[in-house]
Length: 201
Picture 1 (cartoon, rainbow, N blue to C red):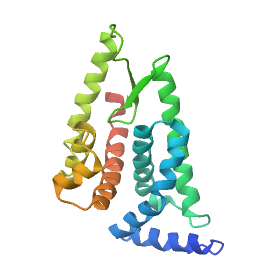
Picture 2 (picture 1 turned 135 degrees about the vertical axis):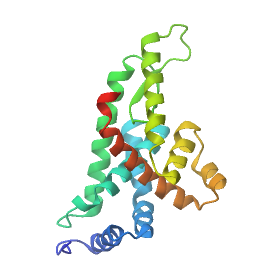
Picture 3 (picture 1 turned 180 degrees about the horizontal axis):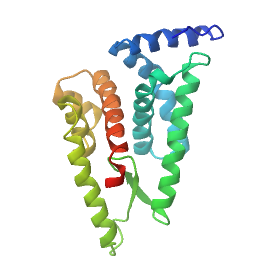
């Protein structure tokens, strides 16, 4: 990768970390994540107005960026590239949510990243939608089983058991930063696997 000549000092610093990450330096991934996690999160929160969705979209944004790191061109700042990925991902999420939610007031993001509407206060449930959702969850569990053990455990604890990052860190006896960094990568691997099984869902 050729170093960007027109980058700011901050941009050049980021580029060094990107190059280290591409060489397999896990700490470089963690440092990039730590520098931009809060900014990405608040941008997501402003766009989707849901703390839970913003947290998941932040994870997805870093996961997609890290998975596509080889595609980054140093002709422009890494932060610009990262924020573009994050905003596009949020826009996709919003489009899906509007289609799924219709007039519903509540929703959750399921394991393949889709927003699924729920209405716990209503006495009427759509059996067809409930069946489809159940099938999706079952298929997701099968796909998750194919991940490497450490990534599989992270996904299961975060998205099936719905544990917090702190609870996962305590349970797995890992530093909180390590849990977050590895979960970003786990989500990227999962998204890639989902892309190849989308027609089956």
